[in-house]
Amino acid sequence: MTWSTLRSKQPRVADILSGTLRNDRLAHAYLFSGPKGTLKKEIATHLAKSLFCLEATHDACGQCMNCLRIDSGNHPNVYAIAPDGQSIKIDQVRELRNEMKKRSVEQTEHKVYILEHVDKMTVQAANSLLKFLEEPPRGVVAILTTENIHAILPTILSRCITIPFAPLPAEEVALELQAEGVPAGIANVACQITTHLDGARQLSQSEWFAQLRTMVIQLGKEIKQRGTQALFTIQDQFQKNDKYKEELPLFLDLLILWLRDILYVQTGRQSRLVNIDQQDVLEGQALIWTQADILRGIQAAMETRNRIERNVNPQLALERLVLLLQEG
Ligand SMILES: [Zn+2]
Image 1 (cartoon, rainbow, N blue to C red):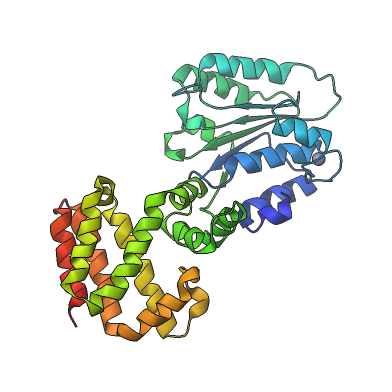
Image 2: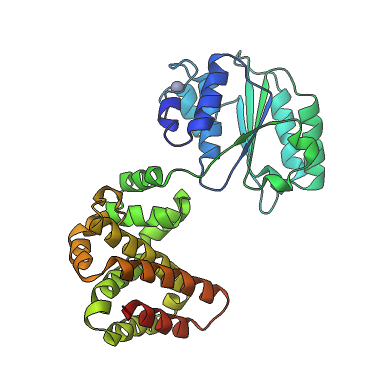
C-alpha cells in the first residue's frame, strides 16, 4: 500500500494527506468520517507509518522495522485504541494521555494516536479527550475515526480537521475480493449489492448468495418458456429454506442486475456486464426477452421490493411479480 495505490480507492483523501505530508503541514488532529469499509483505519495507519518509515519519504514501505512494528501495534510512538465493549472508557483515554506524554526513547518529532469510533465515548471519556485536544503536546497527531459524525460533540469537531471518506468504487471492492480468491462473477455482483468490503466479502462467501443467483438465472430462462412452471420452481426453492424468505429483497436486487445485463447484451454494451462469468447464458436470454419485457421486469421487481418493505406477504408479492414478468 502506498499513497499512489490508495489514490484508486480514496482519491480525495489520498491527495489531501499525501500533499499534507509533502508540505510538512500536518495538523494536530484529524477526524476521518465515513461509512464502514472505507479504509479509515487502514489510511490512519498508513499516515502513521509515513511519519516513521525508514525507507520511504512521505510514504510507507510496509516492510521496514518501523512499518512492521506499527502494523503489529508495537511501535512506541503510535498508539491505537478502539471501544472496549460498547464504548471508549475514561481509563482508556487516561492511558492514552499518559502514553502520549511519555518522552520517547527513540528521538522523533511525532507521536500518533488513532482513536476508532470516537462517537462511542462515554461523557467522561469525551471530556477528557477534549482537554487533551485543547492543549495538544508538541508533535502529537490525533487521528479520530467515526461512522457517525452526527453523534460527535461539536466541541470535539471544532478541534479537528474533518476528512470525509466516500464509499469505495464498486470495481475496487470487486478487485479486492478477486485478489482474495472470489470468482469474478460473484465478486462483481456482490459489490453491486454493497460497496462495503466486509459486507461484500460476507455475501460472496455465503452459499445462499450463490444459490439465489442461480435461481435468478433460472428464472430468467424459464419465465418466457415454461410460464407458471417457473413460479412453482421458485416457490419450491423458497419454501425449502426459511432463509430465502428473508432474502427475497436480495433475490429481487439480483434479478434487477440480471435483467439489466440482458439489456446490456442486447444493446452491445458488454463491457458494462456485472454477471461477467455468464456471458453465454445472457446472450441466450437476450434472444427470448424483448426490451419492453426487460424494462417492465425491472419496474416490476422494484415495485415488488417496495411492496415487501411495506409488509406485503412475500409469497403473494412473488406470485404477482411472476405474473407481471410473464405478460407481454
Ligand atoms: Zn517502512
